[in-house]
Image 1 (tube, one colour):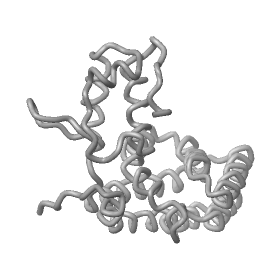
Image 2 (cartoon, helix red, strand yellow):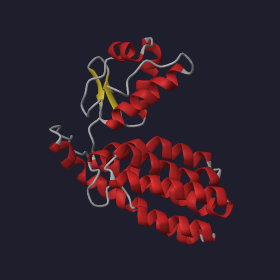
Image 3 (tube, one colour):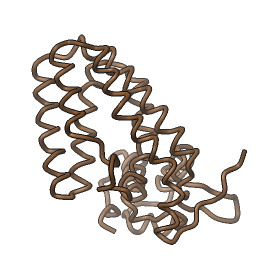
Length: 231
């Protein structure tokens, strides 16, 4: 598991959290996989304490589930959960666009264009990791420009629930966003048209909400049945 390598000694709880979250999102730790803190601690070169804290945080964020004295495991994708996360992330990005565009300078626009160039190249090369990384970098420009730390924290918390499904659908129509939509967004930002930027942002992220409806199918394709939704 490339994502699970020994980490440094600073901020051990956060480093363990980041490594485990990345492993789950990438699929190195598959949906339904059991998680034993002793085994994970060995893989990461840590003691059990920071691993346990990281697992508790991931449980709060919906990537891990636990039953006392029974199991701790990676959650399976559930349509409702992914849909809810996508809706929240969309609204936060809309807010970032509305407040960030008036504060965005030429350097920010240039950074977005460069990120979109990397995104388009990665999509052409079917490089899912590079595409999603460039996509995050592009949208992060507006989040940072907005100065809204609550929006940034919310996006960081819920985007992984979307990304792990998006990775499995990479290459399908609409699954990775659109360089053309990105280009329109960047043009709106450059012209200072915040409302147009919000509309395009809505179009970009609303498409990801469709991924929620494919989550159960994806789980079945990978041989891991998704749990039934509860009313």
